[in-house]
Amino acid sequence: MRNVQLGSGDGFLDRRVSAVRSGSGQAELLFTFLGCVESDGGRELERLIAVRVPRGAPPCVLEDPAEWQGLASRELQVPTAGVWEKHFAAWGPGREEEAAKAAADAFARAAA
Image (cartoon, rainbow, N blue to C red):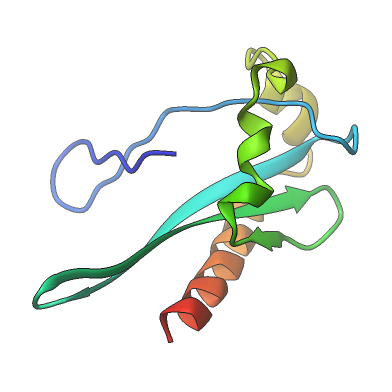
């Protein structure tokens, strides 16, 4: 995951996508969020938090990168063409907001 800012102002645009097989055999969404605490002196805390979102279940926050880094292995990768339509179109829209809230809550605890 990289934080890429394109365009002007506060607009973020990130067009990367990947797809992997999970151990459960069911398609799940995995969102990554970068949380930062800044002061007048600059960035004080930065943490990457991942959130797994299974179909029909609440989001699961993965605060330790070791919990999700293994998903990037080449053996688990699958082609991305049509993956959204095939696996997520029926239930994925709107789940990003749930994942973002779960990540924000976890980051707030860490930042406190």
